[in-house]
Length: 316
Image (tube, rainbow, N blue to C red; front, side, top):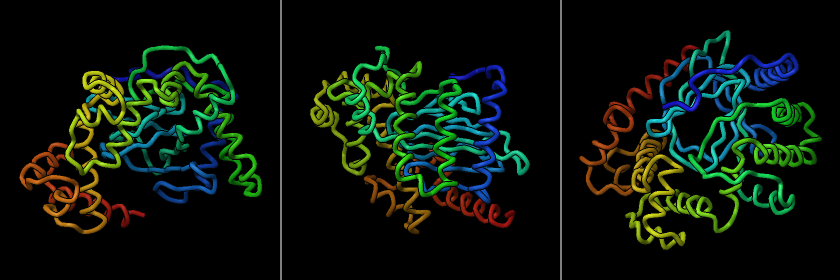
């Protein structure tokens, strides 16, 4: 299943100029491959000149804009593609896998990401009052939307602030607020709206996700989690899967395995110690589930990652 099986017509002339300027700004601020924080709070840039296969990670709520190239994101068995014509929005934290497609040193992937604080959306809704967000059944906690000139212009103005640092403190919050407003007014803005409205089922699922992110190493009792967010067990399970494409238990498992991988790679823990740290009592179960997610047992996977990192450094 794919959220985007075909690409629309090319950008019009004015939008193509905006895209080209955004790509040039990203090039200027990313001297080599990698992900970069910027002087603008919550704004990040990335540049990748080589293809890479799906890499699992925990995505936070964010708007992702591609100025050049294409990226594919996988949620369970669903695939979402975004490119300069289409932006990606992640509305709740969730384990995703992403891969870079058709990148080269001459035509690298150039992208910006603006992290989304749900509290800012709540404040915007409170200040703006009714803003015409359509009421629709909320689906996945991420979606792809066709970009328009107004959204691209706002993102471009936010990135331009990097050239005038004295303006960042005053203007960046205003432009971020405009971008959030435009997201709410878009065709799929109801997905962000529902997350931000207290006592909605979507908001309660987002609270369940937040609880799991902070307590993934603890044994998961669905009854307790349902009480924590004031939902019935059946509603929790149904709405959680509708938003994340996985059950709470599957979600917890991915969090555990990704954190264990980080502990082994960044802190040098042995596989058994990392497994215990994230809540596994059985080393064999940890190794088996790790292999299913990452395609190889822990030792082989880490060796592959280290070789890949070394080769990437040598090619720079």
